[in-house]
Image (tube, rainbow, N blue to C red; front, side, top):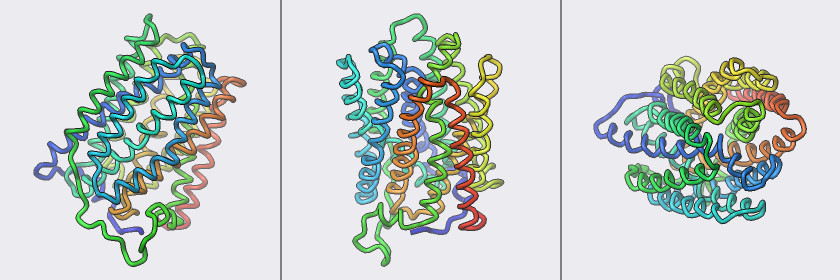
Length: 402
């Protein structure tokens, strides 16, 4: 299943003819996709709370929604690899997400909002691994660097979270819903402009006859260990994504200040992606993930007790490592170890395992821990980062130098 590729080639930021326009179209889609996330992550719990849900119920709804990735992402990834086409599939999914999200308006109780959340995530969740896979395929052809495209997603997140914080302040939480619906419409339109990068050869090898692509990918022991490590490191953000805004509000911070906290962390992420190709040459894929795990141990340990704006601002800078470096390392690890004709399936498994199974489970537990212990929930997140670091060491010992 694995293929031999050079990490430095994968991190190349050289633009070939036609690559610049292709990169711009991908960048627009990324900016809108993460702009929506930039509104939903910090402020969607506020809207859910306005509909009468408590922290535990919000945790249940979000965890069930995230759990849909476990089923939908591998299925969609298999279909994308089987057909070799991604653009039409992404337009369909974005449209479905738009209609599902619009249905939130009619939900006024825990059951209704949870059901709509599940439907929405079923359409929404596969979009990210598909755009990641599409971008990495282009990067492998040296049309552009992955980091130079992915950073526009982070920029979209920064702008959206900052602007949303200003707009939400002093207004009804319903404005959150309206902003996301408008951006989903724009995302659907941007989908029609996406490039269609097709694989030159999607033929299975002799060792892969008539096998489900998911089983082929999971037959690689090293890839499974990688998934476990990535799941622990990245899912340690669950308490942060789900309850940081509620924690900061309980400390007396305004929506505007909270939006700036979120923006600051993502700016650090943007800077990380700007220098992605240089970092890859120095650390390699697993080295980036090591940085993310160590930073996670420090960040979450401090966040458990941080109350002043200075302390919060300081630890938010580590987001560039805890998420940015970890995710970047994971993307390059997948590209350097998984054959092109299995790339969408591998991306789907990564998303379903890391951002689905692990994140949904951690979010569910975090909701109860937050209700019971408040900010001390982040000590559990520090523990997850520590275990993730140990699994990375095991992976390094298993396969040698990356």
